[in-house]
Image 1 (cartoon, helix red, strand yellow):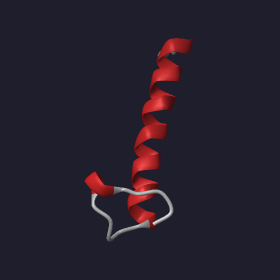
Image 2 (image 1 turned 90 degrees about the vertical axis):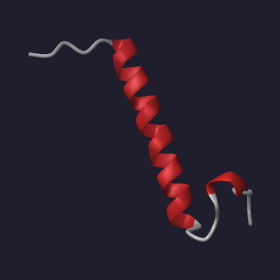
Image 3 (image 1 turned 180 degrees about the horizontal axis):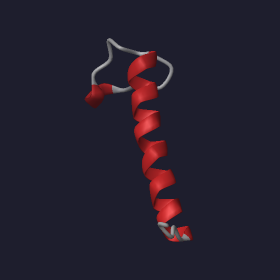
Length: 41
């Protein structure tokens, strides 16, 4: 069994959240560049 402690869960969840938000932003606005993501437009 792999023992997972709280700090590891927090790090993994925050990393997954960051990747998910990045992918979500790209999927919502496929024509936008990563360097020029603007809010609302």
